[in-house]
Length: 239
Image 1 (cartoon, helix red, strand yellow):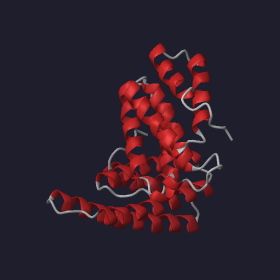
Image 2 (cartoon, one colour):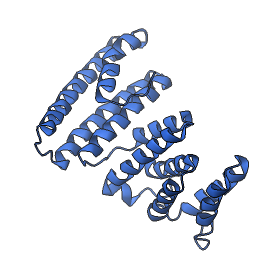
Image 3 (cartoon, helix red, strand yellow):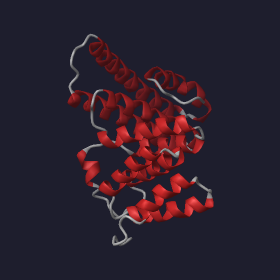
Image 4 (cartoon, helix red, strand yellow):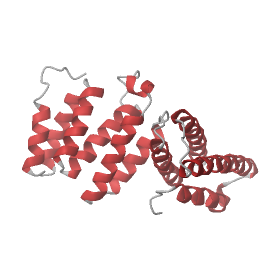
């Protein structure tokens, strides 16, 4: 499946889902899926209404965009859960890609992202498929925007110490993608914010980065940036 980049892509994908999943669904699952997709249809209609108002130069309140975004993410997480119960990991990954469409929409109206897990999973999937510098730079820019628009609650990082918390994985993926761009400014921005948001995690990340420099034979200018950050905070204790 091609990457979903617009709301229409996401809507079309969801409309086709019952037909594609028919062989896996009993009556209860089919009813549950149809109810969920009816709510998605309501969601897309609300989003279309907001987009129309914006096109008429009417102000869209960031709080309103956040509320609508939250509703979309909650529906998406329910659909992800359904794919898990049906043991369809491939479908789950496709559905998680929709979270990036929702994130872009939220960012466009300066809303707040409160649900990060599917977004982080989608970023990791995309990053694994990308080789071209321009694509990696575009993904890096999107991740930077997502970081900026994450809720204050997520930025507090209250689950510090949990390796698989989405806030940590977001910054690790951002650092990896930035490194793979070989673009110095992109790397510096990602690494500076890593130090700000995850100071205790940073030494471990940069130590791993130095290992990758050797293993993957990165260019010298990239190695120098990684080395600078690796040596930047030697006093921080890695937990």
